[in-house]
Image 1 (tube, rainbow, N blue to C red):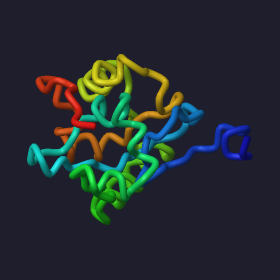
Image 2 (cartoon, rainbow, N blue to C red):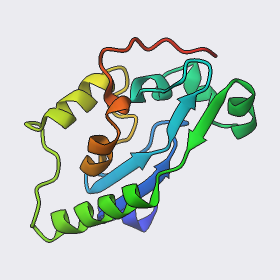
Image 3 (spheres, helix red, strand yellow):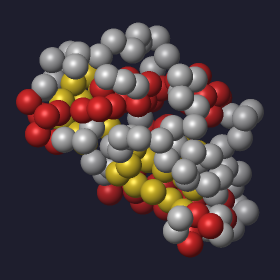
Image 4 (cartoon, helix red, strand yellow):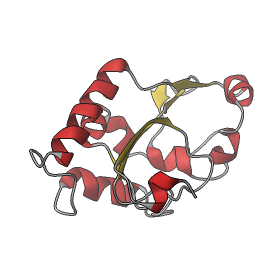
Length: 145
């Protein structure tokens, strides 16, 4: 276990990928890499990315590319917004996502299959606001593997 986890140090993690469950603490905010499905012409939802059989593909960029998926890094704007959000939350200028927030409710619904995939961490609010396709509850999780 790292010192940041042992002491519940506030963290902001960027460009995360969900190959396996994480033991991130409640003081952690994160942003995942997006996955674009070239066959269907759309980004995958968090549920699609984090469930098997797709999650097993995340260990190999080559395998993803061969199957028609493109891994998309967090943009500099996404990272700047998340850093500002995290600092504002730490300084008490802004409240972190809580259970009353509709975005967190959508996230919890999306991740019902594996609610602790990201440990106790929360997605960075600005990232969810900028990427509603990750929480598209209308879409069925139907992965081409």
